[in-house]
Each structure stands twice: as C-alpha cells, then as structure tokens.
Length: 176
Image (cartoon, rainbow, N blue to C red; front, side, top):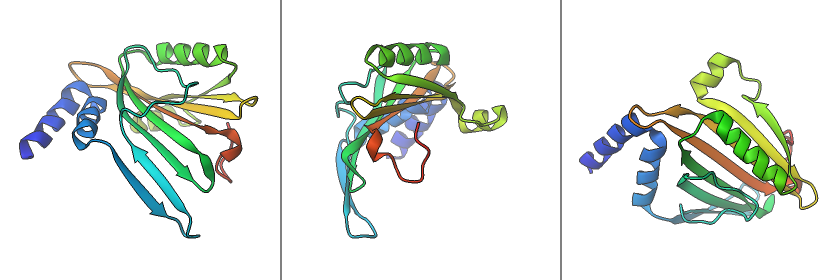
C-alpha cells in the first residue's frame, strides 16, 4: 500500500494530479453514498468514472475521465452531474471548444474568466477560467471550470464540468 501511494505521489509530480486522481479513482472503483439532511430528507450520491454525462455535455477530444458523479437531493430532484477530465490543451483551446459546441446546441455561453479573482489568487487556486452555458428552452445549465496546467513530463489540465436544471439552482447563489 505504501508503494502505491508513493507511486501516486510521483505520478502527480511528473504527470499532474489529474492522472494521480484518475488512477486512485479507478483503484477505488464505483461507490454510492446516502446522506441524511437536517430536515430528514436524503441525498443520494453516486461516484463512478464510467457514469455517462448528460447528452448535451460535450467531451473534449482526447480527454481522460478522472471521475464522474451524480447527486440527487430534495432541492435538485433532477440531479446534478459532475465530470472531471484530464486534457492536454491550452485554456484558449478548451474555451473555444466548449463555446462552439454549446452554442451549436442552443446554449448561451458566458465567459467569466477567473470569476473576479486577482491574478495572484487565481494562480494560487489553479483557476484558468470559467464558462457557463444556459439553455432556458430546456432549463439546462453547464458550468466548466478550467484549471491550470501541471505536471513536469506531461502537461495536464483538469476540467471540472457541472450540469443541472437551471430552475434547481441553489437558493442564495447567483445564477449564471
């Protein structure tokens, strides 16, 4: 077990944390959890790198799935999907791909950049950009967080995608 974690650490250093997380998630396998909320309702969570994304969520070419998950709760009965991808592309290439693919399927896409973070804070947090696509006709919203590149031998960038119904956006949070 110790060798496994040392290999993960070395892999993260050489190839970036997305690859270390990919290996760890594959080793753990799929799993489910249920949480009981304060009001007694339950939240079902499913984690499996092989979970398919929603049909309107495009996958970046050549991307490797790090993890995929789905959460269904009282406040999000349609579910919230999450997908983490390891890619080898510039932030501009990622932005262009998702903007063109989402706009082609009827989404309005906003580029939030680093969400108001100053350059030092964005670099510290590893944020390279954020896109949000809305399609009111189907009540769908997709948010793509683009992370900084990492890794020494192989430059890797993590993409974090989230999708849900816009009408089920969390109360008190600004809608995209």
